[in-house]
Each structure stands twice: as structure tokens, then as C-alpha cells.
Amino acid sequence: MPLKQFMTLPRHILEGEKLHPEATGELSAILLQLGLAAKVISLEVNKAGLVEILGFTGKTNVHGEDVKKLDLFAHEMLIRAMDHGGHFCVMASEEDENIIHLPPHHKIGKYVLLFDPLDGSSNIEANVSIGTIFSIYRRISKGNGPGTIEDCLQPGYKQVAAGYIVYGPSTIFVYSAGHGVYGFTLDPAFGEFLLSHDNIKIPDRGRIYSINEGNYNSWSRGLKKYIKHLQVNKFEGKPYQLRYVGSMVADIHRTLLYGGTFMYPGDKRNPKGKLRLVYECNPVSFIIEAAGGVAIDGEKRILELTPSSLHERTPIFAGSKDDIELLKKFLDEEKE
Ligand code: FDP
Image 1 (cartoon, rainbow, N blue to C red):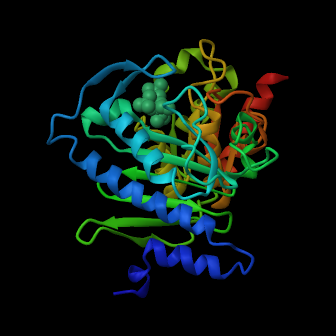
Image 2: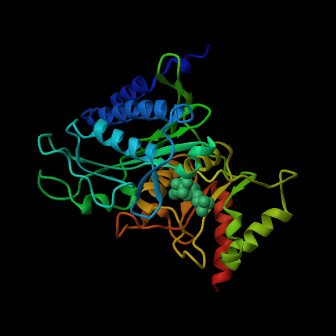
Image 3: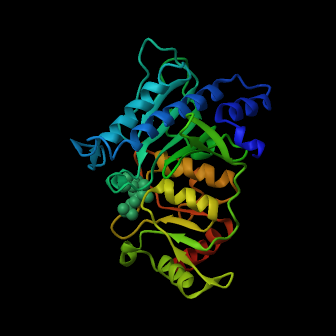
């Protein structure tokens, strides 16, 4: 058995910390705690088909979408797992309209945690992969008191670490603290994440494109032409393939491993697309870039956009370097 199979997530995090003598161990503690929360959420997600947990709570989230019990469970679990370590000054979740302050009796720290507790949740009842996405920043607001909205609205390039957990056939935890991207698969037998994807590099080109083609008629001319280009051309002698799960974490994870493009464009009806800059696009763009890929909003690098509100949306085109460059040419040509 190759040695890497014994590299647990905690060991990997702690060994990574030793490479940075200046590290205080706080970031390691945060990642370890996120790993624990991921295990608890994974367990609950796995039970979804067995217990009567599915169904609506009768509430809607800030986007007017129905909130299912698992969304709330994951949201509350992450807060409970992360609010007492003394590492954060503020948190924000896709399931909450406002920033989340730490309970007054807990120490206030220097980091900021932003998360989408259960992404792709409209897929839960069909037993399709869903996930959790997280972002960690340093606080920028002055003083040692509670953090502010300013701390949550930083451009994505300021992320200290980011990652996601996919609850699929296996549960996989993918993270980057800026140096390399690592994936750990949960061994359900002894409840530990084991290194399964060491130093992930996204291929420079891929054969798969991923987009909700049902929106075709609302796309820009450049995007239509690009998709047509893929449909009539071949890559390494074989036709391009369309794959779209409709769970961003699952589509991004496949793109990371196999290459190609993941796209959620703006269109005539929704010029800013659907996906949220702070909770979804920034963390996955951080991962894609750390693996050697590219993520843009059609013009600019996603990580350079400064969010103006917690729940703002942005178009996103992310994936293999050469594929995104080609796509950008198509988008630019139609602008002229
Ligand atoms: P969901 O609505 O199921 O939560 O941001 C939410 C998201 O899923 C993404 O995970 C996914 O990529 C996208 O929406 C799918 O949107 P479409 O159904 O419009 O394709």
C-alpha cells in the first residue's frame, strides 16, 4: 500500500504548518475543525435517504429559495463547530442574510470564515452529489472587537485558505492554503480523511465542458459561438463532451481533476448569472488557480473582484488555462 494512504488530513495540515516557522497553528486548528464539521455533515447527508429528514422547513432563504432541513443542519453545524475556537472575528453563511457574530463569551480572533453550508441542495432528493464550500480571510477591520461586513467583502485573492467538501459516492475534502491543492477521501470505516489526491494540477486543456445548456437562448453571441465551436471540433481526435451535474462543487471537482471548463454565465434574464461571488465563486476560483487553472467573470479574474454585498452574484468561467483563454477570445470578439 503506498505510504500516502496513511497521510491523514490532520497529519497533512500539521506537517504543512511545520514548513512555516512563523505559523501560530491557528490556521491548522481551523482546518482541523472544518474537517470535523465535514465528517458530521457527511454522516447526516448519508442518512438523508434513510430518515425522514427531507422536505421543506417551510422557510425560504435570503434568495427566496426553499430551505431544506439539511441546509439548515449544515449551516448550524458549521457555526457550532467553528464559533468557540477563538480564531474568528466574524463569519457569514449563504444561508444567512447578515454577517454572523461570535457569541459574546468566546474569544475574538483574527480570521474571517465565509461558507456555503450545502451547495447544490436542489439535488438532495435525487441523491446527487452536493457539497460545502469555505473561505478563510484575515480580518482587516481595526481593533480587537467583533469583525464587520468589511472583513467579509474582501477580494478573493486575499483568501488565506479555501476549500470544499463533496458528499458524493465518497466524501472528499479538498483544500488549499495557497501552496498546492490536496484532496482527502473519508474512510468511513475509521472516520478519517486520507490523502487521495496529492498536489492536484488541473490539465491545461480538457475535453469536457459544463454549462446549463437549457439557458442557450439567453446567452451572449460569443458564448453561443464558443459552445458551437466545441460541438463541431474535436480534442485529441474525439468530440468534446458535455457534463453538467448542476451542483457546483461536483462540477468544479470534476473540472479540477479532468480539465475543461465550468461555466455559469450571465444572460439576458440574469446578467450576473446565478452563483455567489463570496460563498461560491471566490473559494472555487482560489482552488482552481492554485491548481494552475483560470477563473474569470468573462473579463476579469474572479479573485480580483471586490464584492459590494454579501450575496452578490457573478458570472463565472473556470477551468483549464488554454480552454478559458480560448473562450475569452470568443467572448471578446463579440464585444467589438
Ligand atoms: P442549487 O441551486 O441546487 O443550490 O448555487 C446553487 C447551485 O445549485 C449550484 O450548486 C449549481 O451549480 C447551480 O445552482 C445550478 O443552477 P441551474 O439549476 O440554474 O443550472
